[in-house]
Length: 413
Ligand SMILES: O=C(O)[C@H](O)CO
Image 1 (spheres, rainbow, N blue to C red):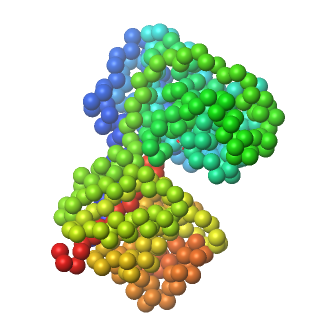
Image 2 (cartoon, protein in one colour):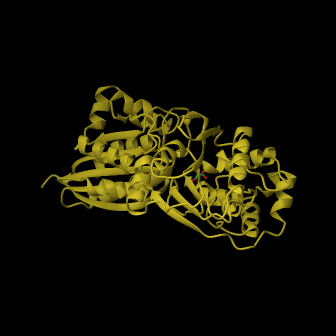
Image 3 (cartoon, helix red, strand yellow):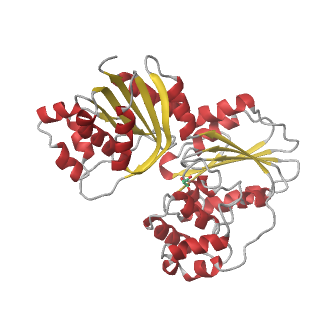
């Protein structure tokens, strides 16, 4: 059961592989011919992989630019690669945004523009709106990141401060038609939220962004030029149209997990397992308690952990530890549970998550591990590591949030 859970996790990661996601999409939607040239621009943490794959399918003259995180840099033949800071935008990112705008503004009616968008894009290409500076955007990013607002709310604000987000990319690319392939790291896959939606309309109006900041009590903490900008009239001229395609997402990875199960009846229980990790553990255990035949319960989403201690861990490891602790009392069955981040990085650790089973607690007791105390100190890494229940994949080069599988075999089956 442990190896089945692990192979399902590997399937989820493979389904989100940026190159595969682009290739899979192009099998049914090949790139059209460009009378002029293709301008291919990749933005985000998966930019190198998406661009490498796309370039193999583009014919004729191509100008290509990829912008990714400093850590992900990778040379690509025939493409210019720029790196930038994340999660707070930096000067290198601003230079990359200027280069994108320069390339887009060269696009004529015979050219075609390809946008390859993935998570991280919001911070990686800061293009401050007229009247704003990079520093204004940096301060605003820090305030937003500390605010507790969710990604949709943060990106609604970000896109009203940018010349590229919230469809701004399309205005620069006009009159060239734009095709966008998008890899989602956002639960619910709202294209307007992913990388703050360079090729789609904004999540809401400037007035709504302003209202949100006031309601959250953080408007006054923003730099004066940002406050003034958000109170100005927004540009309501219609956006040029674009072909936007979702090529990879948490949901697509859950489907891949579902389709790869043998010997257990697969069931996707939730595509939006969000909120506090303790509540998520309760939801999973309750679903497992109701199982009457050998079943693979599948979940996807992104939970949150309340930090109380000084230990090391991440939301997936903490979820696995919570299930390991409560499972033996709550479940009268044989079970295995895995929770993992598809980027291979759970919190500030080298683990992707945890893989626990009905015997984990006994092994912890035998190893002298006080699992409850470690959980209290948010030290799930130490607890799982002591019994070899960490899931280690290394950085996977993609990110479609987290997935979970609970394999349950009732005693009577
Ligand atoms: O870049 C961003 O805004 C986040 O990663 C969500 O896509």
